[in-house]
Length: 390
Picture 1 (cartoon, rainbow, N blue to C red):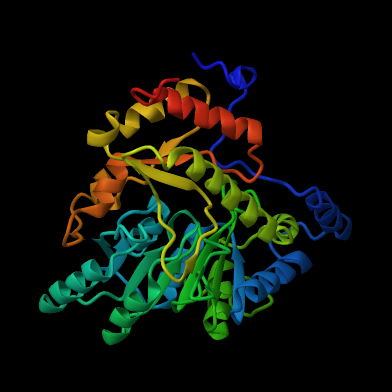
Picture 2 (spheres, rainbow, N blue to C red):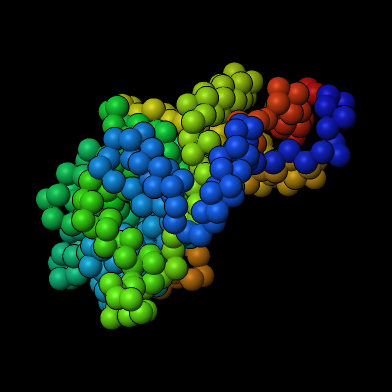
């Protein structure tokens, strides 16, 4: 049945694997030769400056993960036990776990179909409801999914009207823009991830960015075990071991050099999927938001079962059997057992995040996906469709 690409059947096609430029080894050798192996050094300093310059912000702090960056951002805006924090529901758990680290209370906000990101109407509904309870949030975490910014203008205006800071979880959207402004730069703090599946990687790591360089200095203090200035080890406040190593920062610098190429490669992959699959009735690709530029970190789509005659989970299971890594869209946080007691404010028209989870598919989108591999994925996808004639 699956004749095209039979030579690929024993080689797994990954969702979003690392893509090395070849220059990373030179940066790593430099780190070894200089003996800067610890979580500090010239490559860390340079990586922070280069990321800050790339997104046009005043400062950046290299950390061990995007989750660590979110944790410090929440701490910096003063989140404490029993405080409320609004958070996108359609996201990875790393967006929400740091709220629990501080003993705070997550309240989840639905998505909108136009961007798949936080819905302004749902956010406004949450503010009105929580204000009536006397529980305004200490912060709002807005996640930018799959390489795309949320519709930031209305979200920023709502938060400003309540004087509540925004923390922008741009872990999946480095390189994206909204009205020509970089994703991650709209809030008090922005967060990037350099996990192995991201558009550029340090194998593991993250970055906290802000125009408030004094706050970043405080975060740097927290991230190095809150060691007070003394010849001995003196600690008067709780700290964390969150700094990025000089070796990983070296990898990140080489990766950042090719980010624009990686973005274009992923956008080309999306375009090929769109050209081959968008004419099928019942299939809808994640839209590129008005005023926005998406990196298409992952190509994602939804299927209308009533029109296509097949459920998204059936396609996912079939492609997995053919050694093709595909995944559902994120399972919303308000559906997770960990957060079952938390409040959720849904979109007025429909529960968008649940709809996207139930019907969404993430296709292999790595910038090193070959034309032959993508053709194989498309062929396998089409062969699962009822009455495809293939």
